[in-house]
Image (cartoon, rainbow, N blue to C red; front, side, top):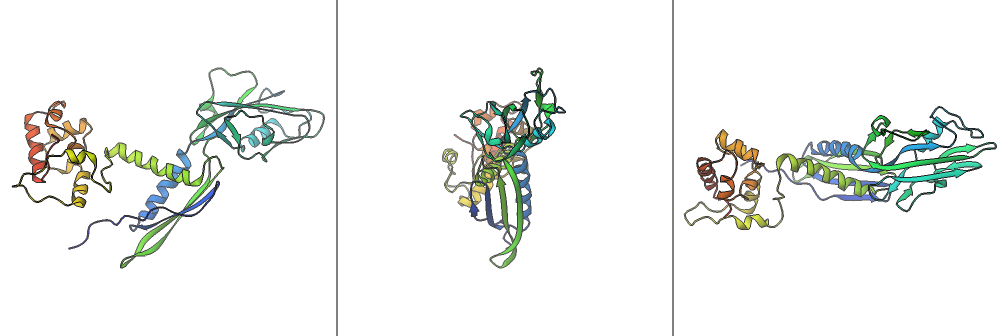
Length: 325
């Protein structure tokens, strides 16, 4: 008989990793899954990892971004572009303010006076050069966010005169790429090895970025399918409450078959449309979710009656299962 099971991949392998660059491998992926996972993770990594960025700037002597400053080589627009390249690590979710005041020489991000909850990750980043008699005073606000947010979406209803809102690239990820190559698993040579390379600004490690992106993906699937974390190495707690079969019942399923059965969607069972709708409206979408309900609990659902209860009990009984007592 043909084997219909899909072999699970190996655990994550760290090829190399430091504060800013990490290379990771996942081996033994089912054919085609390398690109499926690699592309999905890459998109999540770029769009959904929280970070910090400057959202507003106030420069002494400049009322708008098209101003120029006496004694400063760069105009205000160039200064703002340089400020956007400054990367931060922020503690907590509240906005943080920082100031800079320099009277001569080359001004860098390291010249900012920052509070305890804010760290400049690239203090060497140039901001401007004071070439004559003058000074440069800058106030900034740094906030936490996701992805890229244009300044129109950041604009407050009222801002102080001279405050310039800026586009914000919050993502701490500098780059993310993946490669897929074939490898041997058993007699087959077309299984996938996925290698991911992640570069960050140092405010978060590449390993943390990869782990968080995987968690985000799982949370999305869990919300869609109402997964109950049933595929564990040991028998899950809720299963201890499932009533045992009588001696006249069919032989028990083995652990692997039982786990697969719990994942089965209820719309694949032979239930009436009315019963399916009542269960779906209550957020019950899998056999595992159904088995967490008692008879009384099902009868309390809108649109669910004795006929539906008997229907469910008959279907579960055909698989050697029963409702929670």
